[in-house]
Image 1 (cartoon, rainbow, N blue to C red):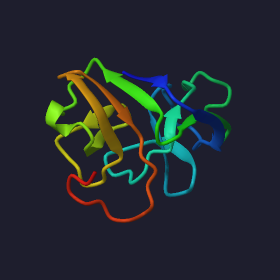
Image 2 (cartoon, helix red, strand yellow):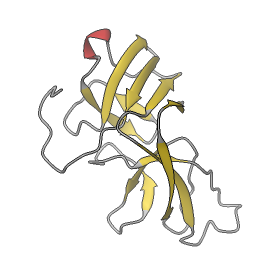
Image 3 (cartoon, rainbow, N blue to C red):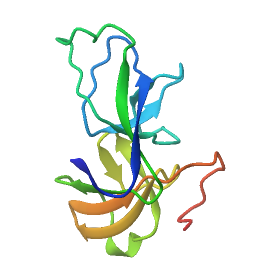
Image 4 (tube, rainbow, N blue to C red):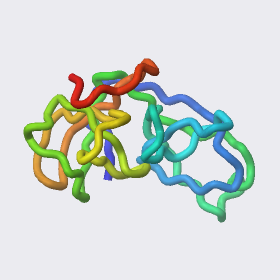
Length: 142
């Protein structure tokens, strides 16, 4: 589970793709059409966290309605808990990838979309979402 811990953020509204279910507290990223959707292992930048769950039973499920996204500052801290993240204490300060919209993958660092702030245990850590400049990632860059 991903949850906000502390720091500044804004709430911004973005169009979502039609007929796509969304889950709150998952990583959000732009899709190829410029709409906001779930981040994936190939997302080069995470915009923030989706703040609203949308199911097929919702009135606006089939439309491209706007959804709220918690957009963090670089110093905004989140907690990841309840699932293995493959990080270690030696990775504090390092950049890692994600596996999907709600899983951090400390075993990969090619896109570096998450910065490990504090390893707590095998299923809990604090992290930030770095702002990307479009420059290619470098291995274990601080």
